[in-house]
Length: 259
Image (cartoon, rainbow, N blue to C red; front, side, top):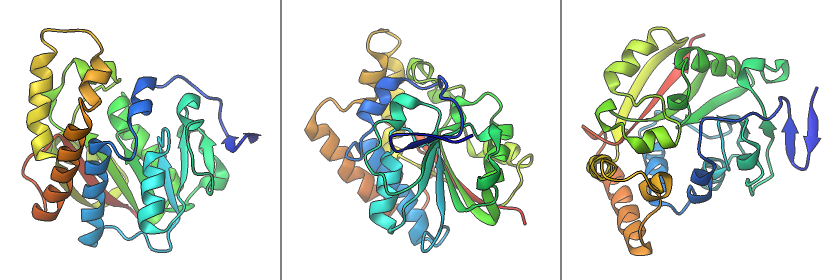
């Protein structure tokens, strides 16, 4: 039964999730990494891999709502969102859409085949049974609808930071291709992004060989406003110049739900 508290609709009970709460305080729309990820999404839109016009959009694992805000501002749609992290949900600023505390395994009947687009940004790397999780997410997507997923790339970049923020794994194109054979999807397109960030991730991994202090903040928070501005500029430059980078710190992919 649905419970409404404030602007959040509780379709499921809130649960602890494999994600550090401190990350949500830093993951704002002006953070260079959030900008970089969204620029790659915009690149895919320009490449006509995704069309947000007059679509019902659902972000699963919406956290504190940064992607909801970016999508609403840039594409003129009001996406719905869900998460199980009550701490993060209560930080969401925009309230023009449905915000759910919801476990997708509960498969709420009113949400079945409801959406044209599902966004899963940096979620499935936290899930042990990632294939089963993605297939459960597709319950909410119309046949022929688009699913957009972003994940951290390359297991050789896996570090103490990944463990601290709750990552189970990082992905490569070959890993995604192998897992995709078990997913109810078609027409898979994959793109790495964050060439500069790839090398910064190597540096971060080396740094953590010598320290265990403040892993999340040191691994994600920009050391200065200037640093954040420079990387924000590089984010926009990369996505304009490189159609599909050969390497990156992250991997974004999109596919259709089978009819």
